[in-house]
Length: 636
Image 1 (cartoon, rainbow, N blue to C red):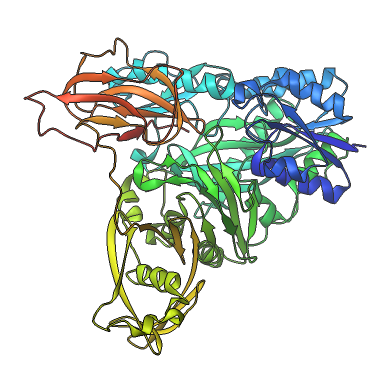
Image 2 (image 1 turned 135 degrees about the horizontal axis):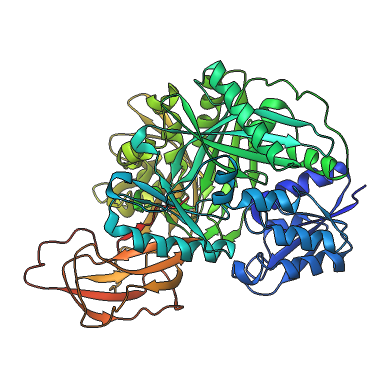
């Protein structure tokens, strides 16, 4: 019987595991890096152990330190969560060799399936050995790990070597294993859908196939919206998916929770891989089948047998991953203070953050998972979209608007989506749609109470003026102090308090909740930046300047790049790593590198000058992107 469990992970999954342990009466031990000293997962556990350092390679990927932490804290079991060391057979062995219970499959099963190349061979599938033009497009993929790291789509043979190098570097950084392989790309170009099957197996020979999940909506080959069951599959195809998943589990004598992933195209199932761990999207399966997969993992590890048949599926569940990122800017991750995160209680919220927490650069930018369950798919989608639309999120830019628009998109509503959904629809889904009355509401809230100092004596023809930045544009608003209170042309001000403004526009009342943190103002779901009346002089940068779009570390530079190098417009110059992803910085014009301030290993802040590309006469007018533009490498 397990009485104390160390969670070898961080963030929302660590908090989620701790919640189940608390319900089961199991004491929990957290591990945390220096960057996570005050993180929520370290606070909710009964005990926390420090892992010196901040980089994953120094902390959450140090299996030796984690085993020592488990022994020192008196834990008798280790749960790896997902990512980090969750699919590391050597770590699983080290846990068992230390006399601890491993909450996961046998190390031999991890070895057989953790390498995607060996997994495919086990299922009778051979990866590409020699890539030719006729094989394109192809997918470069990390053999170990998942979660989007180490994956590249290659459409030109000339790009293959460079993308192989980039994938190896990213995989080594994320998983400590730089092995990659190449396979034919069956993604969005082919209209394929990403469908997976949840399996759960015990030590007594029982293997459950807990339905299907559709995870087709992906950015950078990383899942954004998932649902269960996968809609629109025929009965025979569903049965085939279940049978293949059970076959894969039995082939390696699997124990515990795992996921078998497929690409469904042209009505056929193509095996992708088996993830020998809990998946990020497991809550939708839990909602549909009424099970707690973490609790089942623990019971299986304690030797309990599963019933012969799994529970019946009921209803439909949809999950959206809320990220601190800007989808309109190549999905650039965002950092900063999360002032407030509140989601209506009608849905499930799994998060590793609370109000006031800081979002740093060292780890994945996912803030939370929001899950809705309802009797039908349409009801679950509507419920989730409404909850996200009404959520209060004050802090860095997030993908909330993208999620809401995706859920309400006709193609998704009719279950006609595939893995190319965002390739087709991203511009429309990220187009600015600012509320024209949000700046006025912000100004009225800020002006609340000032009229009592005699402002009503001001000449009516002299309105107050305030300026805000919203949606990349500057907006100027005017209002007046009158004997009756605050007033503005074209609207009736029903109420104007510091935190609530109600406007009547053509007989329709609009209610705005207003919060302010420094110069950042949140009006409902609209974010504004208050602009000073007299702007201060700003630093000027030469044309062609490449500025860091986010805080991070320079991990790689183009071979031979130096001051004086001639470059082409769009040519990759250097790679910046932030939040476990690598971001490519490219030359904005054809020209010469006139200044180079970046160097491998250098840590930079937002706006740091990395390099300057001075356009040659032939290159003038060829500007393809604004200075500092990044192109995020396609990753899983």
